[in-house]
Image 1 (cartoon, rainbow, N blue to C red):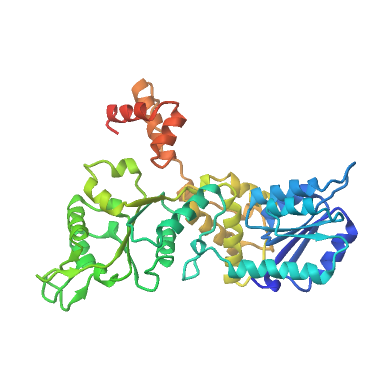
Image 2 (cartoon, rainbow, N blue to C red; image 1 turned 120 degrees about the vertical axis):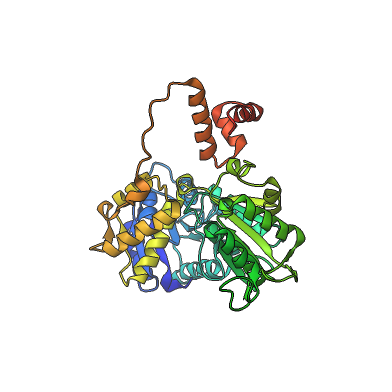
Length: 447
């Protein structure tokens, strides 16, 4: 990131300091926000996309110890750990400086500061942001996986662990959570990144198309086969094959797929010559683990083949402050796309956004914000600029009142397991029973 692209927030209760820093930086950076009250920090971070906070360590009070700065530093980092913080104090206490750096501060400046030193500190931080990018957050195509929540950090950690291996990966998650981005990130951080990445929506293929698309065919293999065609398995040779919606294929299709994966060869339709395979397989589905474990729907031996490691992508409602991060990301992108000035976000806009459950997940958020940017009249997005999808927000039809105790228990178990994406341990804990007891109930109700 360059200095001219940076957004800076300055928090200091000294009006002279705010004026001095605003005048110093306004011609160098993209934007400078200044405020005397540290209690406004979270609101300002929600309303504006901020790269660096310049934060005073001492605010008006009976005693100035510098601990006020440490407190607000921790608040900023808990809100978004990716925001860099430069602390400023009139006290040159080295112990306090070390403590602030250990708590996540990027730098420490002593009053009275030298302008060159402060600007250099900002440049160094921005240079580090530019050159030290976690590969798990951005694909080779430039698509970013934005997230700072604990659940997404777990996903990023798993990506960094499994990407360099040859392990087959199964990605689980609701529609709209970004499973395809996860698949692409795994490929782009693997040893196969310079080889093909081939995606197939296998759930949309008929039985005939399934074989011809995946395995290919020879000229004359069937009516309409007027020339040889390479299948997706062969096209992905040396690279990664991503089979999306794997949970929707039929048992017959599963048998054909299992045979190919076991033998590591594929035979095009109309040919007797097998072709050796060299692919890394990634699959994805919106089905839960429980659905996949149902052998009447999905072969267990195939599950073992495609699921060396599974990655569960959390729904947006479980990602906390990621909603705000994604909001800034998408609004910035769409403002640029539609040639509009950078937007400010009204606090009520943020509140309405955070109060929505987003059943359509990141995809719904993305389209909602794009619509808001297109329809906005001014340069501030307000609550009435947010119009959520009627399709996603439609309520499920009400069922008749449940009075049977066993039906109540079965329904509760299903809801909790779905909420926890099939995680039996978490579900048992939430239900207040042991894993063994939960398994007994699953068998009892044939779930």
